[in-house]
Length: 324
Image (cartoon, rainbow, N blue to C red; front, side, top):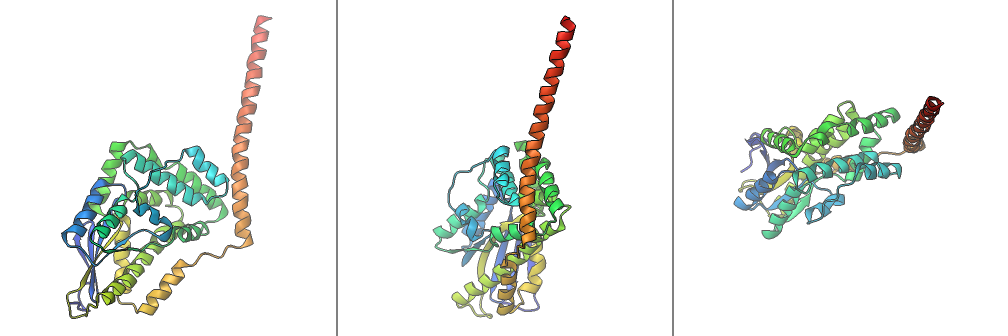
């Protein structure tokens, strides 16, 4: 039975938290995103005591990752081409990093979420998506940057050393993260690349931690009411699977969130779902960055060709002088 004065969060183990609420208990499992062991942990947690519902850190725009699919890893040139063609640089770079790291490990990104969905289907349990739309997160993150900061961010992201690691080094890092629960490989990469950009960290990590805690609260109450569980009865059991990098953030917000009224929760979710207002100045800046990027690339190519031609001419001139 739920007691209002009881601790709202318990740490079962480094990668597992127990979130208490009125009439429900949510087992919050943190995963490494590209780890086979994380998939095994998800399967075991659901199989040992099938819950009333399973929640996953996936949004409607990414729900295809819950079904089997072939991993496509773009080349660096293809990634840069997408940016030049107008796709959001943050979205392209995140996809490039995620697929590249996953290829090295030999596992599909977010395989643990697909594992959760598969187990839920087996036990005829609902799978609930609790993440914010990736398009909203990216829009809010990108618009938080000033024009010069956007260029700096792209450069710092491209020069991150995570892609230089070999498979064994990546596996070691992932296991260390999974055992400490302080981060997951993608969250760590984002933190590394965005250390100098507080606005990005706020939109990509802090806001989403709060958003997912709100969604867990809203859906947990819905599941409890659907199961007609009263507060003096045994709480309904729910499993939520998220990246380990979100564990501390969700735990931090839970003390406040689990006591909020339903109307407050709904309003907070709506506020975080809002797209940023894009002014003509922002559009102008993004267009300028795009064409500036193209011009920069063409400039580098042009200078290279010029130096090569001039250098070749100089060599030919010297060779002729030597013959004479």
